[in-house]
Image 1 (cartoon, one colour):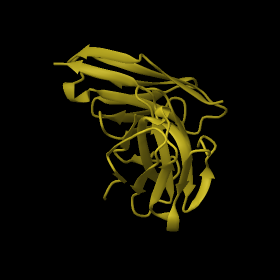
Image 2 (cartoon, helix red, strand yellow):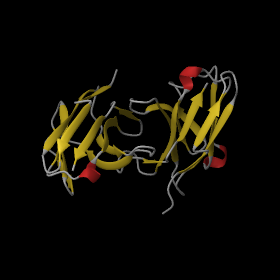
Image 3 (cartoon, chains in turn green, orange):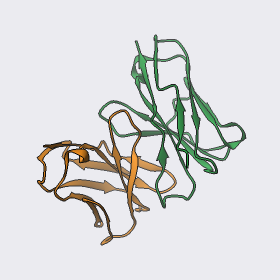
Image 4 (cartoon, chains in turn green, blue):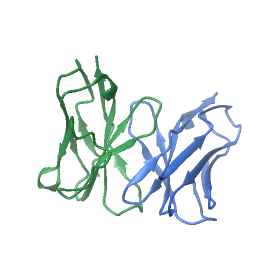
Length: 114
Length: 107
């Protein structure tokens, strides 16, 4: 079974620029999550999709972050404009059975905003 | 508000020296408690799910236990390859993570 694919692996941008991250979940996984992990912290949920609908985006800074999941498969997370405090690893995860086997995470995209 | 607190923040052990990591939680109603392992530059890797007090799960040198207020991850006779950050999380379709314990096993 292929894992969760994310790209790019690394990205360096200047503040006020925009950036986009891409995620391809495990085939057949209906639920997709985007997490933000700041260095030394645990992952923090940004947004949860069920198929192509948003279930929870209460922690997503909507003035600068946006996410979509077209056709209930791939997803993109965008930041515009980026701030220094957005420097973090952005992790995508997917799951099929709620809570039973946990989530499968991708390797993440490390974003550095300078 | 649900909270997950892990201790210690970091732990250094000699190879073969057993120890335990702690995860305490305050939630409105426990749905599931999860343990993950995270290696540098990688995403978290699922280890265990626990649902009820008294439940235990084992995998190689790791054993996770659950009480009504906390969970322990026991590491028996660890090896250098067990070095990683261990994350605890609670929830079900939406899970909240603690900050993790960075474990370093010295050969």
